[in-house]
Figure (tube, one colour):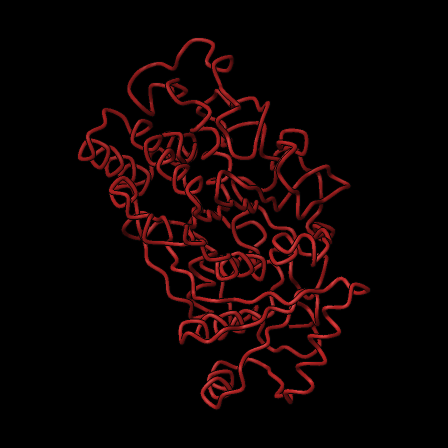
Length: 394
């Protein structure tokens, strides 16, 4: 999985997942040649690699044993992690086409990793319990319809989206969309606390935490929910309820395309040509989780924008790991934390290979980016639950 010898990093994850589906174990060699995978030597796996255009090497049992022995040495920052079973993947997304794309569904499709889509009804019916991994993307859990009001309130898709959201909230027994979305956010919170893994990008990152912190507080203006917001609602925000963020100031104006001070989009002054973020290096033997999540063939990854592009450093809780950052701009791009028995990762930005993806832009063709470091970070998260230890019987 290094830069020099792998022709298709993204589909390599798909082959690894395909192998796990066949109840074969895989060793993930952390920090060894870009985070390589050691798979059993079987003709069907070789053929699958050839079909998908994935580079591989066949090695002897003696060579494999030597590699594992070298990796085990305390002198090197490497580790071999056993991946045991293919995680069941759910993507939280509304039904029907939306005027934006989801980087995760695109890369899962490209890598040929199966997933199922769920939305509010399924979440509230506790169907999350069927899955090991949940993805949230361009979503607004605050009930403010993505803060698209100023630019798109007359657009047919915005009007239809608002109508459908209101009808669904009513069907689910809620008076307001914000109340339905809060209920969904609380179910997702409970899923993570109970041992699930949640991965979020773009506006799902900060809007999720904001919704949790505003439980019981009306932060929506009349054009969103039909009545005024609570007076002085900023002082009623409870940061103890959030996963990752603290001390943020909410954006009150419905005409500003922003949720809060968490996001750095309007505060950053970095030209596209120099917009990169650096991945942190961790001890593979002592900190295998962040090491897994940062496996890549480069430590420097191209930046990319989104409704939520990146996170203000001093508004991230101290118990949350910053795994990717742009130090010169004081921003975090890629963060990870533990909540109860589960885990969450927040990845700022919308599409790792489309710098300023806008509403209605054509989707990225991943055939043009088979070695994308930015997309690799997503797939690290997809495989991570495969390495979780099985629960011990008591």
